[in-house]
Structures are given as C-alpha cells and as structure tokens.
Length: 88
Image 1 (tube, one colour):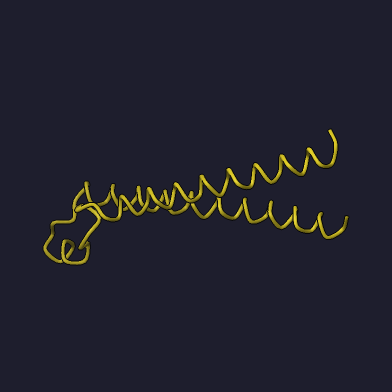
Image 2 (cartoon, one colour):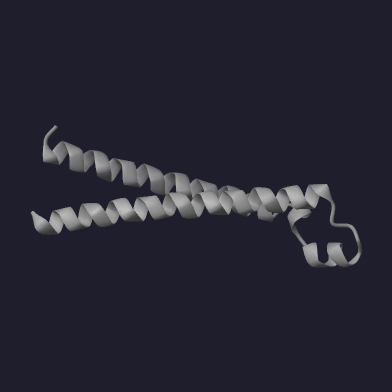
C-alpha cells in the first residue's frame, strides 16, 4: 500500500469518526430536549424524578461520552496526518 493511499485512508477514517461524533452529539441534544430530561432539579425537589428521567439522563450521558471519545480519536488521527504531512 502506497503512502498516498494510506494517507487517504487515514483522512477518510478521521472524517468518518468526526461524522459519528457529530451524530452522537446530535443524538444527545435530542434526548436533552425531551420532557424527561428537562427540569430535573424541580422534579427531584417534588419527588417526581423517576426511572424515566434517570434513563433519559443516562442515555444523554452515554451519547455525550460517545461523542467525546470519537472526537478525541478523530483529533488524534488528524494530528498524526498533519505531523506526517509536515515531515514529507
């Protein structure tokens, strides 16, 4: 495999990871806008914070964690690509 083909594959992979990170972030925002995710403080005070609310918050946290991990992987790849380009 030539260096150019390998570099193209790395750039494509980094772009796909970035897209997946963006999608996970958008999924998290969708969950955060649901009624179950809104007003948790007042729901806790009133004793109305139940399983549905907890599940929504856990789902949102999982999506945000996924976004962060995928974004970090993409950044690392882009850094490797940029370092390689500067050395050529």
